[in-house]
Image (spheres, rainbow, N blue to C red):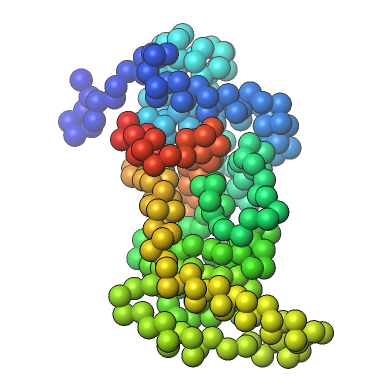
Length: 307
């Protein structure tokens, strides 16, 4: 019997007819790919693969890492399913030591490279972010930080990672709503910020606020810059008048967030920012792999989140 107040863990008995185990097997196969091993080898040793498999399995089933390790020691079928030999089963302490010692920037870079290696590259002619549901980036903030205040930080990050292009349409929910963010999106990043408006939104007020940035007059071709600005403004005003047509896209993204929470984020008991960031990175990788495997339909994402 578990100690008082502690939840009893469900035995990790492999059932190949169970869709959960089928999905987990497909997820972990990514770490057997040559390109994945090559990426990981650039940042750390190959023993990291078995440790990452254990962590991702614990997140997938929302259970403790130590419990997965104990189950691996006891169950041959589980070792075979995860592709970990008996002598490769890592100690729990080694897993936490591996995660804590890993440089934060290197760890994040490794995760994102693995994710990018298994997902399709963005087509040149696309102008809508993000129709593929592929995670683009993640930032760590306190729970009480309002999204509208981190708009510029988000945009700086997608720009730094060369994710956005001039003229892109970026869909954001009402949490990012602020007149200033429409201005910043157009003037500083030359994108169309389709931020879902709130009930008190006045499109005529925004129309009057959207004017040429002063930087246009310092450019080599002010006429061309003014033409581009007018085109961005026209597109934004048009989309804002029919923003509800894009609610289905936002709904699908929300389903991805719900799935992310089901993969261990609801019980993310970590005590340092570095630790939280690394587990968040692994969660992003887990979600990215699921999406890359073709699980994008709303009903499928909802079913996975409820497993």
